[in-house]
Length: 407
Image 1: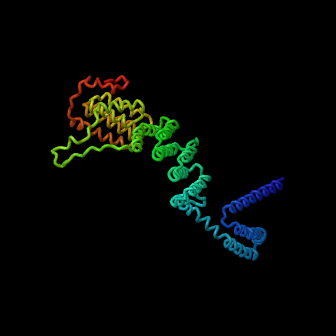
Image 2: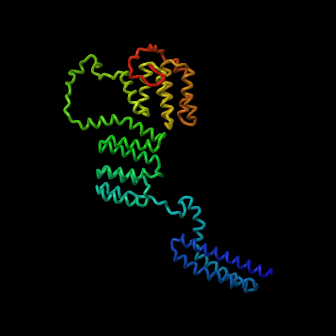
Image 3: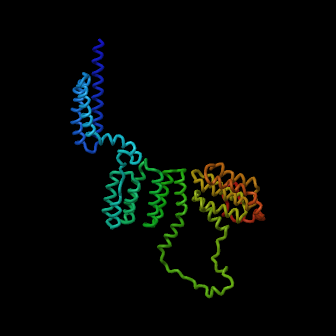
């Protein structure tokens, strides 16, 4: 019984050994740079190992002068093995160290290459450049660089804006497309609509796609900001197409001899009228941060109404997904207005403290902490300014905000 178990154990051991050798051979063959040479080495190695096991080992076991001869033969066999496998042994020792600098034997990550396409574009071979880009996109369909390059050739070189729009939409409509890349593509498409086609409506549609795709995000806020200013862009485009003759008044003679040139300066728009324009604009574009900030400054500096200015700035500060630097800027601006309009130390301190509370790990918090240290000096250096009597601007109905805080 014991003899049977011993034979079974030897058989299992040999099977494991053979399987290990076969696996080792197959793995080495797949990783080898020269498979035929590796096979030749194994063809020589197997008989050498077999001769060592079945010839040399029994001779050494018998002892006497045969053992001495067996040791010499073992040295010869070992020398043969070393000659055959010396390069492989060197690689085994050196590769782990070299891999720290070279990255090992892992093949480089495949990447698209657009140098050929750009060269063809430089030679004004636009159709050939499109073909070269599409060849790379066939292998890397989600590569943003290739998609933008293809669309730019279509829009700017081939003057085929519809095809460029299809290219970008195909990329952006993929659910896994990164949000920042989608926003960049739609912004570029909107710019092309404005620059190449003077099409404000199509540009607005591109921005609205960002807002609809990524609501309540910084990307949506930036797109809404650009939508809010498309009205001014449209006026500029209309002016550029309107070539009607315009009468130019005669210039002022002897300007250098005038005692003063103040009367030559263009008249500034009345702040009350400007505020009314801003209010009407914000009714249509409530996310326009630039205009709302300007309106808050008018409320504070022209009307001396800190409550209305605070209301506008708090709406900006409370908008979700606004960048930290913007929020900190508005809180600092609110503190400035509070100081100018005579707010007490505690009110301004609480305003600046919100920066530290919301962004404790950013540089804006350190700057706010520094300003708090010299806040009393700012308050002492601010001259008191008499307030405007309530009701003076009541007749300007354009400033009605539709909120509990009325003029």
